Image (cartoon, rainbow, N blue to C red; front, side):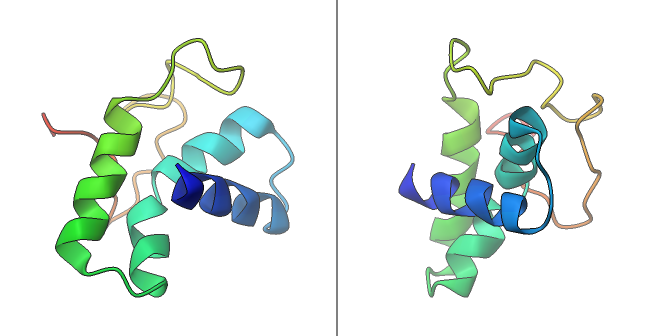
Length: 86
């Protein structure tokens, strides 16, 4: 989760002020942040998938729209945040 918090805060530095949007942007980029920090790509991908799959629906930044094909999906070419079921 520390990785997700770092990525989330980076989205704020990138001028996203909405917490829900910043959180969803982070889910879609967690694997890249991990790789930038030196984590091997397979482990970075696995961690990012698990972070998104097991997110807390009661968290104030949670949105059901933060899923593939929904409103907050940025359709990033390399996004692997979709979860174990693709």
